[in-house]
Length: 256
Image (cartoon, rainbow, N blue to C red; front, side, top):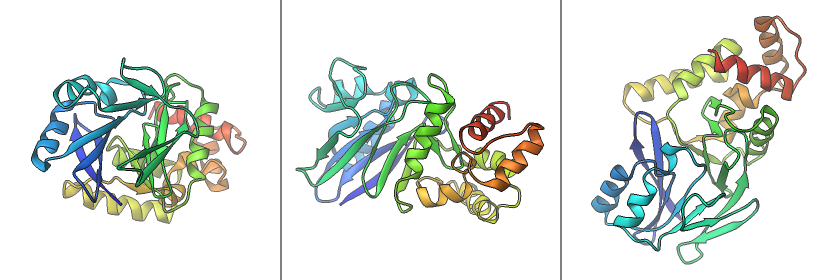
């Protein structure tokens, strides 16, 4: 068993801390800023065993060197590419175990947002960096629309109960866009109300779940006829289901 602790960073980033429920050992995911991580570690008397990196963008890795120098240079550091001299490179399907083999995560390669993007997941948890957001997805910055569509399709195939730990609080703005694409989606309307209440109280909207995202996230709904029809009307161009719809949708969101 583990507990997931939320660490706020920058304006809207989340750094995730996975704590072993039976000890003070923990794992840190995507530490773009060392300061709030060190504050939580000190306040809760935690021991960091490993750092997991989903991709190379600064807001996911800039705290790594400080954490290693302040805490322990022998902390295990996992990433797809050798981003640091200490990096342990991982690849598709690799299983990493922690906390005396009581907790494990599998690696999924998800090129699209960046070419080195990976996720870490098990039957209950998904740490997906900037690939899937609640109500949205990451920009296609290094890969192709086809790669991103494939990445999201793979995530959508995970169990509906999987908790989704993305790394940005973009939910409200994503839902504002989603509403323009599916204004009659009752699940989306209900979620927008719930999210608005959470944000008014200063609460995080993450984690989401795969099941929820499949009902409200337009980027996971590119096979839905109602969405395709509405997008075709907006763009005044015919679209086929799947990749072509996704590509048009992602380009439309880039200019929203």
